[in-house]
Image (tube, rainbow, N blue to C red; front, side, top):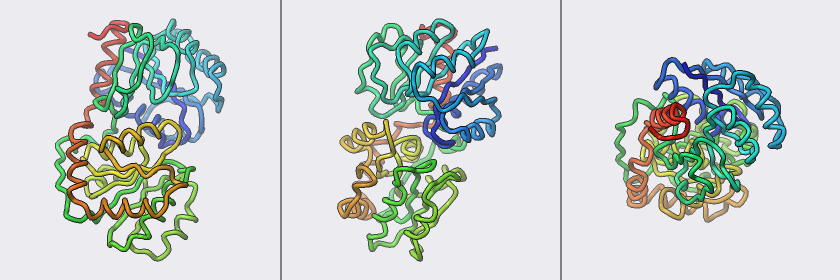
Length: 347
């Protein structure tokens, strides 16, 4: 039996960090049913509810953002004996954090945009589409698990691994998703841009329970029957499968859409996401509109172009084909369990 502890900083219950960690926790249990999993969370205490809902013990450490606090709080919470594996998905760390905890346990680091001088850890996992553009120093001390083959999606998407897409001449159904409170106002900005288009469509606007702009969104939509607000946590896979186009943040929603070869428009989704969005836009994996506060008439024209241009959507679907196959959580769990057993050597 192996004990695995997740150390995650979650700004809300539907944060990309927490969602992928929960999916990976499921992968561990599926790969080795004897695994025990628990979570140590910082950030929003309410995020613990999402963890407990999945059946995992969860302890909230507080809201500290400094690496020194993080190290002390994490060491204290781990206790003795330490778990066999610590999965860290938190940007508030430094080399000392990884080094000292690495002396106690096998550390797997989920990394999006850290820029450390050294990575004294057992494994570095970067599942982003631009992972291969990153340079990791001292790679001899860490196994590198990079790229979208390691995207961990939840069980909700398991029935869609063989999904095949046929893009219609005109895109009619749009799925929009900016998880959590959406403090950047991306949902409002995207709805505003879509409203200025004369085309007929049905946009399902997915919002979570902690969405922070409910009244403003209702006013923005008004009586426009082209928009329908839906629960962001229910039926995501089904809605994406039925959609012709997605508008979302360049985090987990983007990678979920890739499973369905769904042509996607990205709006800046917060710290750490902009590099992914820019890379995806420059390389034809998505259309990147920029930051929500800067959306203007150009954004509306790009959206209308996507609705009407089947050839462009076909090219995008072909570009993202097979990048995310829905098996990432199994693949990643097996790799990390093997590395942990071999203490850092891939077996």
